[in-house]
Image 1 (tube, rainbow, N blue to C red):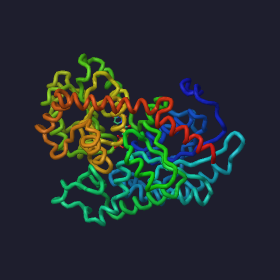
Image 2: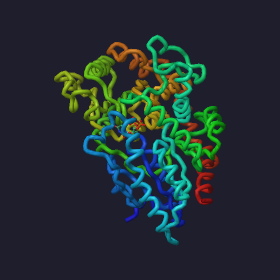
Image 3: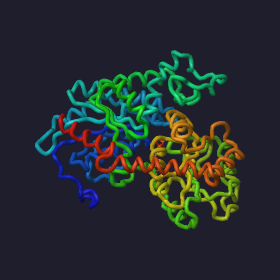
Image 4: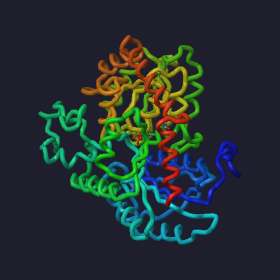
Amino acid sequence: MEDPRISRVKPRSGREIVLFPLPLQGHITPMLQLANILYSRGFSITIVHTHFNSPKSSNYPHFNFQPIPDGLLEGQASTVDFIALVTLMNVTCVGPFRDCLAKLFSDASNDRIPCCLITDPVWHFTQAVADELNIPRMALRTSSISSFLAFCALPLMREKGYLPLQDSRLEEAVPELPPLKVKDLHVINSKDPEDVLRLIIAMAETMRASAGLIFNSFEELEPTKLAECRRRFPVPIFTVGPFHKQSVETSTSLLPQDRSSISWLDKQEKPKSVLYVSFGSLSIVSEAQFLEIASGLANSGRPFLWVVRPGSVRGSEWLEALPSGFLEGLDGRGHIVKWAPQHEVLAHPAVGGFWTHNGWNSTLEAICEGVPLMCMPFFGDQRVNARYVCNEWRVGLHLEYKVERKEIEDLIKRLMVSDEGDEMREKMKSLKREADECLQDGGSSYRSLQKLTEYLVSF
Ligand code: UDP
């Protein structure tokens, strides 16, 4: 049965888009959102996915799902060394993916005309497969444009001597990549650091060879970086974000969302009083940091909703490290869940700040709801996003030096109850306005989506 919210869309044209997300939460979510957007434009959708972290197909009865074996052995499917995992899967998935794609495209009929493949660019092997089968392939980069360009610059950063990172140079500015400091360069730890550079080079080369790039961002947010990206990647580029504001709200969550987040927020009487705290689907803190975070939240005196993902505190299953009676001692001022309905939380009138790890989805979701940020990036593009939030857009405060209770308490107070915090809230409001406007008839993302649709139909 079709979801009644979805039946308002254009009639199916018979044209089908095949999408292949990288099996990590922050990559699956925008890919499925893009699929929903394209579905609403009249395309049929097939999602090819690995067994590892497979999306919940029951949430998408209107899509066709094609699982492929990922070739991972017991114990290899760990996201601790993300680079090692995707390097391996770029090899093990080649055969199964080629067979699946060849079948999908050769089984075309009048009702089903597959016209284009859209993959995450981290799946760089897919370009060779698409070339071999003569299928146009586009890439959806799920990060910001700014952090994507900084990522591509890592080989140059090594040539210039910024990498490997040296403690004495961490605070230096990187003149080639303003406003970044040396410490903001994407550090992704992996057992073989060469794997990171090989991955970037392969990704950038296959993006240049692709039929086009899609970003979950909007022109007004990153105008100079978009222009630079167009110069450096001479293929059609479409900025059609923010995705989640255009597609029907279907849960892409790999973990069950705890609805008590919303009922607890409903009980908060003061608007914009609550700090929402979540560090995404991958970040891990030490037990010592966890205790500093807990004390900082308690000492700030502000109400907080805190997502502690199971396994996100090193050495603990969930909350064992928390001092006994911690929540009880707060008398209802704090609420902890394993996973929250984040879009709804950020849109809730009681929420006035978001302590985030600055994953791109979380950052963009906060912009769309006008919620200012407290930034604590962990790795990869998060550091770049945090720098842009704090130094370029000026809508957040950076917890940059120490994860310490006093520092945390002070920053929370500055964000939630100070003129400085109010100023950032105002700036966030104007970014939110731009995000709203770019999606309206004639807005930049609206027009870009129009062009993308025409482009896809032309294949
Ligand atoms: N998310 C959620 N509930 C939570 C925490 C996160 O639904 O309790 C979602 C969030 O809305 C975002 C995604 O998980 O869409 C996290 O993606 P992001 O790029 O921010 O970070 P990553 O998990 O990739 O580090």
